[in-house]
Image (cartoon, rainbow, N blue to C red; front, side, top):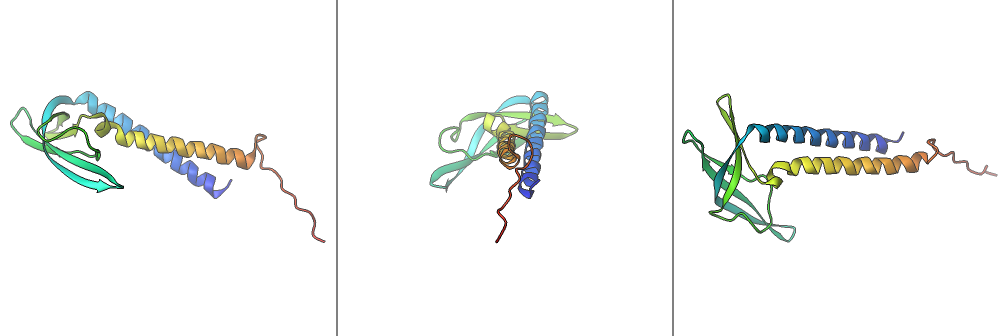
Length: 149
């Protein structure tokens, strides 16, 4: 077995395991959290690879009057939300601590999707490399060179 196959196997398994762990963790959070609305209070615009991108910050208050702010974790290009818009926020309070996340699909599931996608791509490459290395018969082809004269 070649070093490339071993490395791809480790990368694929790690990415898929990480993606599945992230999915399970997000599902637990979403089930335990309650939804509130937050207002976009600021945004940070920048240019990346020729595209206008931005992060935004939202502010909201909990039932106990505590005011919190969150920054988006995924850069967005154009579109919504804009300053003053309402966005959903998921909040989970437990053990005196508060955990909150912006409730958009990309904010919640981006990391999980990327890890599972990368794991699937590396697993596919691994299959192609393995098939090419070992062939349909399952054994590495024997290459014989002509004797030197």
